[in-house]
View 1 (cartoon, one colour):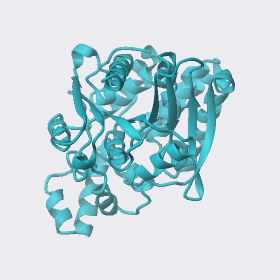
View 2 (cartoon, rainbow, N blue to C red; view 1 turned 90 degrees about the vertical axis):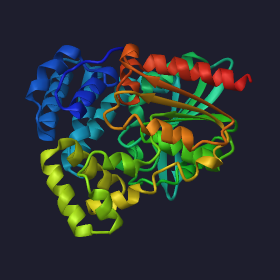
View 3 (tube, rainbow, N blue to C red; view 1 turned 45 degrees about the vertical axis):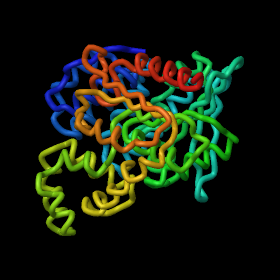
Length: 376
């Protein structure tokens, strides 16, 4: 796994996604650095990442091409034919390139869910199983990004079940399953399908809210890891859009809210992407309806029902989530069996969202915590 964080762009989100392409997408630092100055808009991003993807594929550098196409798809408009093409092409390259892994080590499966299907990977060590973990991502992840994470955990004798849930990856793009805040539903579906008990549930980013939510309603989860600080998705979003919006939301001033957000979307690529993606993944037509739905994506109101061992992981320069939200999660957990928390910093090369600059350090901390919690 790669380690480090780089200053590649003045826009915090573009800079983060460029680092993400290097750390989790197999991107080349020199190539990413060369395109960074050419990116001012999401359209620029799609053009430059597609160029890198095509160039890598033409030179048979398939591992890089997979990541570049995936990240080109990331900022392409939801619902467009080009987004679908980029997604399917990146995925096709991914499974062809890693064919031996999925033939011999990781099993691909699908689980019925509300008349559709959730994609699942199953990875089990051949010998001793020290723990069984169930993993899911957050607002914009695909489980294909997690292959190095799965392989690393497997090397530590951890059995892994990873899935794309409603609103995520293949569940959204191929099965048309939209987001639900009731995350206990897909998690319970996975646990039932594979007859799992006494598991550790790990959720990243928005998954840092979804995993605790599931744990509040599912006692087969014995340990929960919130890999990201997410007490309330609605409040996180409101930190990125115009002041006064909360008052308008309380007054249900739908037309004013839509006009205000649409104005902000024209000048801020992060807001534009976040709102467009959110409307698509939650199957709503307006920014107001999206914000209204995000109010349900919170764990504070049910935090007292969480009684498992709990690990909270944050990053002190997370550009999505204010660091002060850390305390809100802690305060919402009065009845957990145990609470461990860690804030990663630049000294760890893990100060960014989900600590992308030093994934191996985070995984080591998670496994160490799991084994300690199990041996209490």
